Amino acid sequence: MDITINWKGGLSFEGAGDSGFTQKMDAEETVGGRNGGARPMEFIALGLAGCTGMDVISILQKKKQPVADFQIKVHAERAGEHPKVFSSAVIEYLISGSGVNETAVLRAIELSAERYCPAQAMLSKAFPMRLVYKIFDEDGITVVKEGEYVQKP
Image 1 (cartoon, one colour):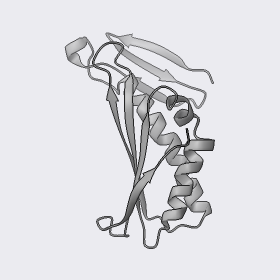
Image 2 (spheres, helix red, strand yellow):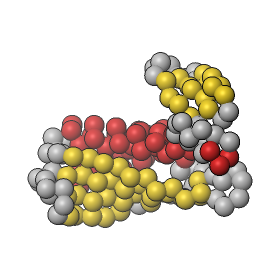
Image 3 (tube, one colour):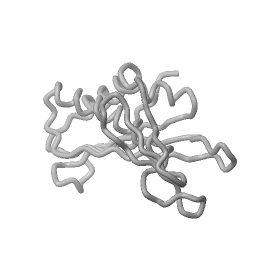
């Protein structure tokens, strides 16, 4: 993988990887940025969520689960001192659909965490992650099942 970042003035950058899609990065105005793009650490968390999300939805589709909606939330805590790395994270998988099987959801999360998601494999070496899930009925409001997948040591 090759990434190129081009400076756009101030603390603004525009970058692209092998896919060719460009992304804007910037910092808050309080630290000299123009608030014109996502923060680099947000991209790391977005990459983590996207990586595991693509795995989980792909596995659930192969298992013919009736997923109507799927969302992932990542809550990442950061150290108080520089370099302000992530110190822990909770990845929350929110799945809606009538009759989504909890065992299938757990297996999809397990396969992503233990075998397929390179972002999760790499970042889990740097900080602990909790992997929690909620399965909602197709209305997206009524929680049918919820729990946590505990990663293997």
